[in-house]
Image (cartoon, rainbow, N blue to C red; front, side):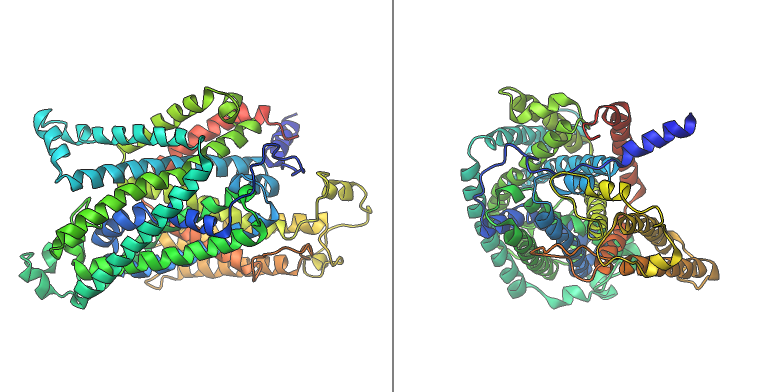
Length: 587
């Protein structure tokens, strides 16, 4: 009895959703061009990261080597972007990675992905609220926070100083409601502000190269003594100078944090049903927006660290404050004003995905059905907006900017890893037509003599995918994900590895041998011959590389970040096991 109950639960956890032609009866009109998608991706990506994150990371984590961190983070994002692009043309429905994992890996993984995306979008909104508050207060000479601190109580200044953040959250709730009114006008405004933002950032880059000093990338102990720091020994957490003042560990930690700077590209995939030609515009929109964002981030970070020595960047400072360092006060006010406007507009791109995701999960009964009314009822949009706003307000109130960025990065990295795993699995699966589980039908009619043998692992008999070969790839991919996670744990947290300790070296070699062997098994299985406008090249290596990079970056996060993430996941698992697994509409 116990075995049967566990078997039934296991089948429920891995049941997959079958895509049918009427998967979305309320499909929106296809009016978005490639330019619209690129503008959407750039507008959602170039925001808090370029105006606030660059200074925070350069001062406390990387120094001038932030440009290296951005390069590595952009390459990692490009790997994930290619996987998203293939799924965008292979599963051309809204839902992003939630739907992808539901179709490919099963219900429990879809819920994990969707639950992660919810905290990702909500944390992003909270991050924008914190950044907007910080920039607005700085623009007024910190008069608001100082007044609150001086006139209310000196014992709780930090808490009361965040009251302005709630005002920003209230404004963002109003923006969220406007999203349901004039979709066409929103895209027009977004494109205009994205263009203005790129022009202003180009001015920042040119100013940095004109007024910057290359010596700020190769600081020595004498520079610190002249600055009144009495040598490098007194710098404490500010590093030791040079281009890489925080060492290789600082670069790894910086890459993990800078990954946030490029995660906006996934918004493009959420609009696949609105694209005029999704097979062409989705891959092009992702790649072009990532390239533009990399050059913007690289140029701005280089200009910032050239204009201002990294150790002179103030905590909670924004990008425009670099102009005060070189005496360009007018440029400071202009750039800050554009910053505030761009943050206000960037929130538009993330509100639709939140509502669509909650709507889809509630329709599948993984969340409470009342949430499925957010797009059909007259009053429910207001209720859902208030619920989201409360969560955003709590996050913005209790967590710092860096904490929110790290929480977003963990959620995004996990979602990207699952998407890469989905691409690896679905390419080797039998085709499904007309919403019929063709793989199961084939399995029932399969000759009884066909069994898995060692020879079939490396020399399969069929040139096209079969349920047996698809199951082999599914199991091998799951094992690879586990082995890659163990490898990243050893590389990131076993201190004896760099000192030549034979113990960790033996473990790493053994893991690499197992990973290579299982990858060879997947490589020998037949791939689907279905023609697609875009396919991830170098399968299975590229998705596996994406998973490895994403997981390794996740290992660089702090224990506090993992604690917050664990609490959020426990809440989600309690909701799924208590409600979703019993009421799911997928049979």
